[in-house]
Image 1 (cartoon, rainbow, N blue to C red):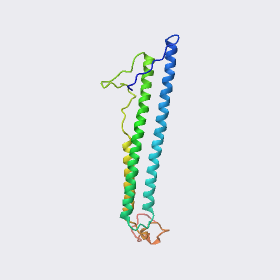
Image 2: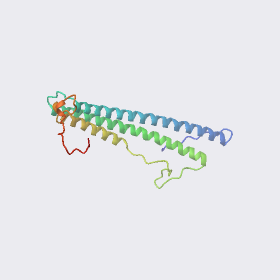
Image 3: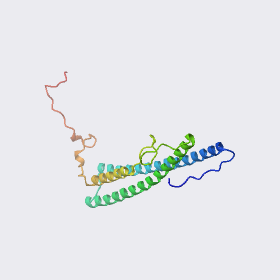
Image 4: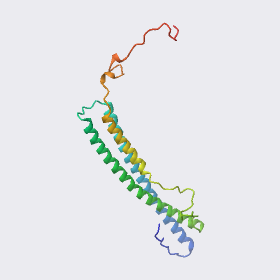
Length: 194
């Protein structure tokens, strides 16, 4: 954070100001944490919903005999829609990432200020000037992976449309096709003794 922290006025001594500052920092950190947690939950709920819808579409197309007259046109439409969903999903997740990182920065700033109040010194810093604290992992753009999964499922939906149809007579279940069950010829060299 590049902005200066406003200094609290010290009423009748240093201890009440520290206590007031500590309470304010804890409230700021908790608020940022709650926003971060809600945003991550919404993000994953959206991702899982998109993935479920694409997987269900692919499963329905593969398992049913759809009367598609032009599979290539249908595949092109699904590819376009799947690409648009993947692009919008990536855009949404990356915007969510920006706000999530901002909340994480607020949390870390509050933690550093709490550390400063507790130990009358700042957190140790590394060569780059970032806090050298073992519980602060580096932040990454995790949203790219979610968008790639969405794109892969959209490609699977296109593949489901283009996949060759399995004729009904090749069904293996006895209820659908009793002729599909072949009887093994009787043999005198059976390993099972009678």
